[in-house]
Image 1 (tube, rainbow, N blue to C red):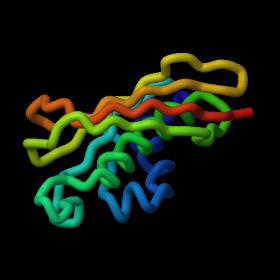
Image 2 (image 1 turned 30 degrees about the vertical axis):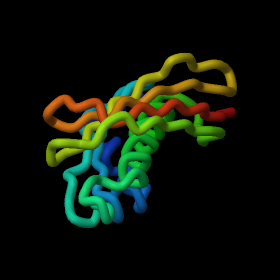
Image 3 (image 1 turned 90 degrees about the vertical axis):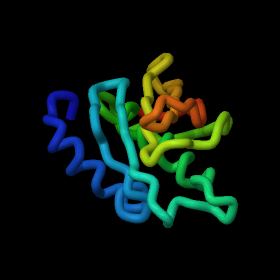
Image 4 (image 1 turned 135 degrees about the vertical axis):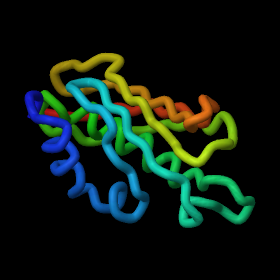
Length: 132
């Protein structure tokens, strides 16, 4: 999968139906250890306060980490995730950029930064993945 085209990567991760179908996440850029994923903020993402729900932001960050951690490696599964919500999104699109911090033999450490298209820093997620 490391040499797959972006269209092939999108097809593979389209089977992550909660992220893609329910939330509208899409893969914009991907290679081993790196992914950029996004979603357009729609009424289904908005909470009762009128801003994007934390669960939508979490799902996008988790999806980006899943893409980054599963390209060019053995299948990797999340062991733990931590997210800090830093600001309310001001734009109409969320963008998660995920990168590997360290990929070991069985554990990988990843960070995803979520912004909106205006550059507002919305959230930061760190995750530990297991793959063997």
